[in-house]
Amino acid sequence: MSRSDVLVDADWVEAHINTPGTVIVEVDEDTSAYDKGHIPSAVKIDWKKDLQDPVRRDFVDKVGFEALLSERGISNDDTVVLYGGNNNWFAAYAYWYFKLYGHQNVLLLDGGRKKWELDSRELATDVPSRAKTSYTATEQDASLRAKRDEVIEAIGKQNLVDVRSPDEFAGRLLAPAHLPQEQAQRGGHIPTAKNVPWSKAANEDGTFKADGELTTLYKEEAGVDFGKKTIAYCRIGERSAHTWFVLHEILGLPNVKNYDGSWTEYGSLVGVPIELGEGK
Amino acid sequence: MSNDGCGAPAGGVTITKDKAGKEAIVEGHVLSGGAPVATGYARLLGTGDEFVAEVPLGEDGGFRFFAAPGDWTLRVLAPGGVRLEQSVSADIGHIPTVEFAV
View 1: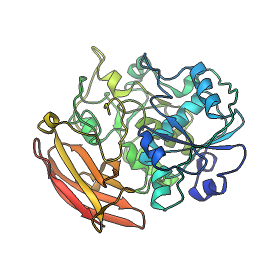
View 2: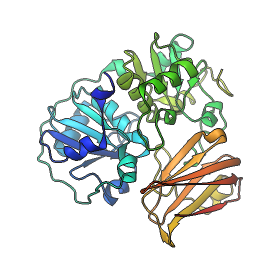
View 3: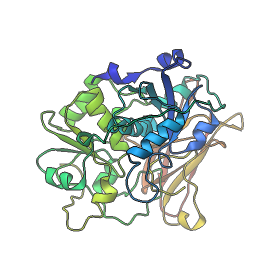
């Protein structure tokens, strides 16, 4: 994978709004964003209602993913272009799902909703009607998802990249600063983790930084060893999906997993090691 | 909205009265000629311009952050190349209001 295989710009999306076989999908936690206005022809996926299991802490299973995409009118052969707010935070998370379940042709709109809005491009409020399909997903690709035991085993052996803000990494905050801070779990980070806040990979307009800048950020500045396997984590696995996208899809590192249990799981485990303070 | 997600709802998370006493909240509005700017983004930056959080502006041009006590920079981005900045100090139980005029 490389940048040109996984990213498209706003001009490309504008030119493909009505192209058969291309489906534009907005993914936001705040569904009012889509209702306020979306890229013409775009359908909506709600990261929580549509992508999370309503009972267990896990995400939607294969059957559920198939039902979701069939209902949204997405076929196995379609090129899916994902975009969303927050520097494509949730769109990258959805992208990871699409890859986990084996969708071949999936792209991110570079800059996402923010770039589109700041460019004053057209937004529509009508909801498109797409004919239902019969989507078939593959089994989850285990090479993209890290579970807790594997994370503990990776301490000191693999790259662990903590993509939360420095204050969350150090244990001073338990959630991002746009959210209330009450939480039950302990603060801190997984020992040996490098702290590279996810947002450092994005420019102010939400687009991804250039390959050279990204390599400098992770390899030179943070000391991530590109020759080793890597696990990215954050608080609940969304921001780290963005970093997974950068390392695995843009920079093409072969062995990168997203730990979606992330700090809300790790920081609540009994007996596991925790490190406090700044990165080492 | 519950905080079991990490998303940033437009305008920031709504607060209840009792919460204001336990958090270091920073909030404000972005206005143009007195009218709210509903399309745009507010960013909270820490020391050295370090990005900390971002929310889309609410229908009333509003934004809200739950910061740690200390000094922060607020930056507003809006269509037309708008890029404004102000400094703010956050503290527990005190809610500074920062108004931006485009």
